[in-house]
Image (tube, rainbow, N blue to C red):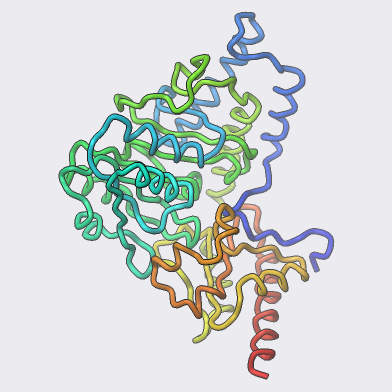
Amino acid sequence: MFAEKPVYLDNAATTKADVSALESIVKYGGELYYNPSAGYVKSLEIKKDIEEATDTIAGLLGASREEIIFTSCATESNNEAFECGIRNKKGNVVLSAVEHASVYESAMRLKSRGMDVRFVKPLSDGRISSEALQCVMDENTAFVSIIHCSNETGTVNDIQSLCAVAKERSPRCVFHSDGVQAFCKIPTDVKKLGVDLYSISAHKVGGLKGVGALYVKKGLNMPPFIVGGGQQNGRRSGTENVGGIIGFAKAALAYKDSAAAFDASKLRQYMAARLTDDRVKINGSEYNSGYILSLSFEGLRGEVIAHMAEEKGVLVGLGSACSTHVKSNRVLEAMRVPRRYAEGSIRISFSPHTTTEEVEYATEVIAEAVEKLRKVING
């Protein structure tokens, strides 16, 4: 059915680049290749284009232009949040046990330097409760990081409530959220959420790899992570990725428009209903973005299911693409998913360009693979 073109259902790993993003790279790498920091008119025009792109990203976050810093990726944004958000501050650091690898490893680096790092255990569905957060925090908590939408399961945390609880428990704490899987999919108005720092990525919403951004709340004392020529008003040095930044803004707008007319939850529910039985576990919560479906097949191996699906032209993930070298799944372990299930996990993720026909075909392929494997195991 889809012999020539794979059915791509790993959009949480990356998305197909929007045409506008590709055109921006060509335009600002060829015709308008000037350095935006130079003094001639062409460079000033490009600098203005960057400012307009910044306004676009800021608008999608409910922020202002001066609150946006462009980075090379969300991993850099998360690293900057931890390295600079906590700099010159005393106290403990609190994060959830279900964070993306870039957040988890940033925290572990702080721990290796002697900082008190504490983890909030999730509920069995992956959500972080206000009660659990309160129990781990104290009046000396200096930094908190809770993921907005899980990159593993699609579970959405109530960041607005969690941030309010954190600020009440420790008014001086800086609150960060990894919003990569939330941006352009669910509401991400940073003012309503109340966060101080918020990380996003271009290539998850049709932009190109190599571009991310970090929202930094106005008034927050945030020293630069990368120093040098003083670009971006001294907040991140280094010549800007002009085409990438402008393409990010254009692609995000296009993705947002497409997402408004796309019912991801309907596709997720379709697959879940047809692939689950008493030997299959859906990982996550009913509070889901709709864009990610994590399934665990008891007694099977997720990588085998994924390889069998790929042979039929269906591409799915095994979890975070940033952690494929790790044998165990830290997030599912934190959610207390039994090992006999966790080893048989696959992650299916959609985009506004995913069609019903693709999902129907993929469901059939995965179901056939699972049936074949169970017959082999059962003799």
